[in-house]
Image (cartoon, rainbow, N blue to C red; front, side, top):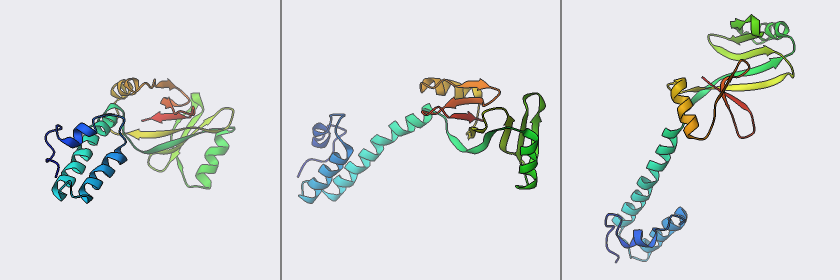
Length: 173
């Protein structure tokens, strides 16, 4: 039987120290060694636990480096006639005007909070969607985005936003 795992110095870690080793191969090797009697059940569980623990800091670090979206906040729609669209959302879908920016031809519709932000302009269609960010602080979010290689933008149309890989505006609130 192989010696128990020894603070990253055991035979398992020596054989699998190459960072390009596929996780599935490592797990398969552990299970194979267990099935051949080369590892005890305790050693198998210990090895699998160490693999899981070793993977956790990387994923936690990746999540800490970014921002965490908690929900879809609203949808931004460009319309050809603001009043006609406001009437539609009020009469047909029961939404109310939550707030307006007359100078920018924007009406925010919802129940208690904004669900849809309407803006009169061309071309018509979905302009952006907004995600609520956990503990949103613009300066902190900006710093984390920049560390991730993403530069946020700010404009009247999409507010504080980033572009996804396909160029879709994602407003962060």
